[in-house]
Length: 170
Image 1: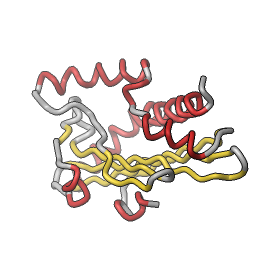
Image 2 (image 1 turned 45 degrees about the horizontal axis):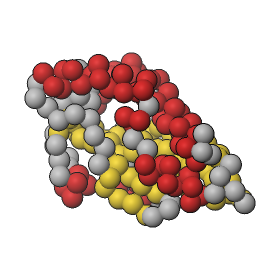
Image 3 (image 1 turned 90 degrees about the vertical axis):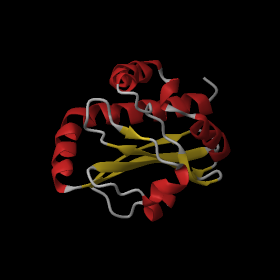
Image 4 (image 1 turned 30 degrees about the vertical axis):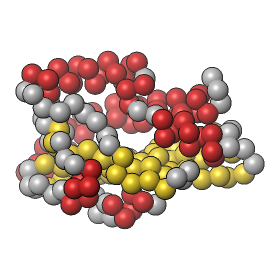
């Protein structure tokens, strides 16, 4: 997978998958068009967090595409101090993200990987990997993740359900 090349070493990984009764091409279209802002409940959660980002004049949470294998995998990324109340998102040019290792912050990759597992059946896997740069920050991130990890998992599951609905034309 492309994500393996981008972040072979990480401090955290979460993985969710779903089998969708649709051809891979249709699931790909839905996955490629999916953003976290398409789901109302997720938008509300992000809006609450972004209040602090806006007050601090920081970039809002966005996940630019950093790598893609048409029809099979798309990888997005984000950099910052996720454990800070505002998220302290850093606006890093896409081409620089793979090199980003600023001490005191973190980098996260998030992908959708698809594979055909039979006629009209597609497995979609969503994986998030995080690497934290600094021992003190890693402790802070782990505390943060203990609090928000279940919600992040819920968001990924909701996104996979939405991709399935879109793939099936619902």
